Amino acid sequence: MAPARDVHQARTVQEYIDEIPAWADGTPASGAPMTPMQWRIWALASAGKFFEGLVVFMTGVALPLIVREFNLGAMEKGAVSAMPLFGILIGATALGGLADRFGRKAMFIAEMALFTLSLALLVVSPNYQYLLAVLFVMGLSLGCDYPTAHMVISESIPSASRGRLVLAAFGFQAVGALVGTGVGFVILANTPDLPAWRWMYGSAVIPALLVVLARFTVTDSAPWLAARGRLGEAERETARLLRRRPPYPSRVRLRRPDQTAGEGGDGGDRLFSRRYLRPLVLASVPWFLQDLGTYGIGIFTPTILASVVGAQPKYVRNLADLIHGDMLAAKGAALIDVLLLVGIVAAVLLVDRVGRIRLQVVGFIGCAAGLGLAALSLTLDGSGETLALFAGFMLFSFMTNLGPNAMTYLIAGEVFPTRVRGLGAGIAASAAKVGAAATAFLFPVLLAGLGTRAILLALVGTSLLGAAITWFMRIETTGVDLDSIDYGP
Image (cartoon, rainbow, N blue to C red):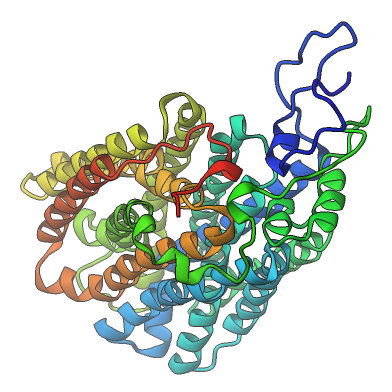
């Protein structure tokens, strides 16, 4: 098998990646095969999303124990839930944007190292203030991972499969959510005591450290190197990325991407020009709206189930009551989390066929329907209430990962040119986490003051608004060569 194009012609990195080889008789292959290095990059990026889902959703199980150990009130409880999200808010732009300056690989390693360190420090938290500080640092690392993980994948794989592979990696957030809830339950079952929450977080330290070490072995982003004018390095990294047996291409000769010609710097000033208003709104506002529901519902699903279904007594008399209620709620949350995984699988199968925009709009509408059903359940009695509540949350979990939770992440990493992609995707992720952090911080207070039904109905409205904004600001990026994205002078 050999390349189908002239080996002496200078091309962009993406054109080399998208190159479809031909058999000896000239028949083209069915597609551009993935190399071992491309699969390694994908797997290590997926690991970052797994750990995010693990620790964020594990918090839902750990939170009652943390509250009890440190004797926290409603506001302090909300701060514990919101602090990682506040860190993500800052880290996505402040650290994710550094990937445009220092490179994708450097930040890919740095953010995972910071996560591992914060995870280890979290296990030995001596007090509430220390706990908040470490959770914030952990959030910084997870925030950096939002744009960085997307870019290391999308800038190293074929355009035709970019959507499903990026989303498949993102889907490990749902796997992490399920595993985190499951690990929490198992640890509670075997260590029914307040320090159990420390074992929950501690269980991830060694796996995270192994991922840090493995990330040193990947290639840097050749499109980023080319955009910085470092063509020699970009050619070497492209050749290493595409190393196959039988080997092709036999030689890599790059041309500078047209939109980066003569440009330097980090691109921050250009990103905030009028020409980027539409992609900024599309990438940021729907993501903000969907995170209002996803994180609020996701983190506090055990709490809601416990209060509505009666998984714990009205008055917690002792630690045994607390552990028992937490375990029962964790079981219910795990059942709902399975639908997150099913939703992302559906998104992976459909994204490159149906398109990003359509799935995001349909997903937002489905989220509204699920939340509306959950709100309706609170007007029912007995088994009807329980059935409708679970059905509503399960529909929400499926539709959010089929649509907005997956598509907002994907779109944010595709609608910006290479030179400002890290900063643009980071700003979008930060905007999203404004909603996530605010929801997590205020949710315990609002739950006590307004009640579950009022909150659910408000989230129905934000979901419908997300669908409308997505449609009116739409930019479809399915199958688009990322090197070709630009919005004029």
